[in-house]
Length: 387
Image (cartoon, rainbow, N blue to C red):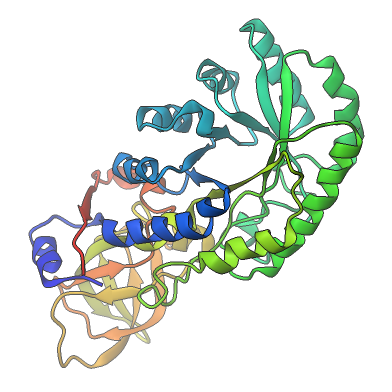
């Protein structure tokens, strides 16, 4: 994964820092274009996964659209070159000022998540003498079989509109003079590793699409969200997700009308494997039954293990030839007992100063960092070194 040249540069840098392999990132984008964009699908990149300007520059260059979940992300998207007519604005709790940012930029559409939000957008659009294009986010009640914190499509999630509310929606829509209904939207969860939930989503989307058509609504956008997972346990052998199978599932099971476009909102699968968190071993110590390796990265730099019990592969990238394997609790320096990256982790014997790479951190890593404990801001490095 890491070249001698890259390792030499790491040794000179202050750790921890995020490192991005732009070569792998661009190859991933090419696969998305080959298996998705080439079929006429509209791929929105989810800025919540990683909104670094250099990452977004590559997304824009690849011709993808943007999926935003805050006014700040809408502003970042436009600043980084996304055309407003390629920006979808989702999020269960949009503030009035954020809705106005979307209206001001005349974005493609708002993904609306409640009856009340629909009314508020109509009111704000009226005040600005505008018509807001909207897609209704409907909960299809499909279990994504993923972590409970990243399951979003069940009927009792905070996200989206339940099917039981559709009669009220159909009564309300004719009274909203500043709303144009352009589509329906779904998102069932994140880090979905099997394709069966996506097949079930297609079948439910087909049913709901027919319901809207039968009510006289001509929808142009069917947005099936994202959620396609990556392989955290073997990032080197599975650096690029199988987009051929992913998009093929929708090609086989979704039923679009002649006037409809299929939209996706992919984040983790686009950028997740391209990023690593580079860190150093500060200290090692032996407990009563455990060995501890204390590194200089913590939950302030990567919160996923503490928040989701996520397991990232950790590799020694400094010289460690002929060292025996040893089991460690690999922990950070933050004053919280939850600041643990791996427990009972088998790795070559660690020594103070060893440089480690915590892999598969390109998504929901750098964007979620904090300065808790008054931690210093960390750096970012990029490489477009080819093999």
